[in-house]
Image (cartoon, rainbow, N blue to C red):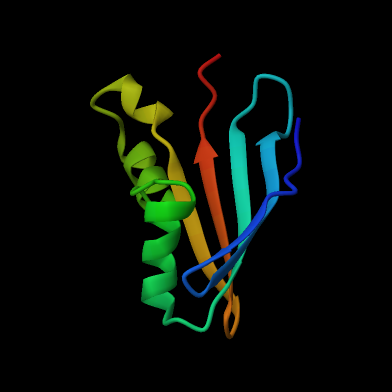
Length: 101
């Protein structure tokens, strides 16, 4: 189990890792970040998925494909992200890495 204390500032972004690890034994791993920036929301999202923790599958698409049925069980183990605006200039970014146990 873990919690993050990682912070960095770069290119107009202030990033703090608020959580990193598993919430329970043999569970999924999570990386959660608070991002502060005056850049437009689309640019902040692009920065998160390319530079903070690379991931290109949204959680909503992951769960919608999971509910529709999987062609390949390996698709269940794909990492996926959630990005949301908290208030002007402040965002939440979470990447989920499904457990392979």
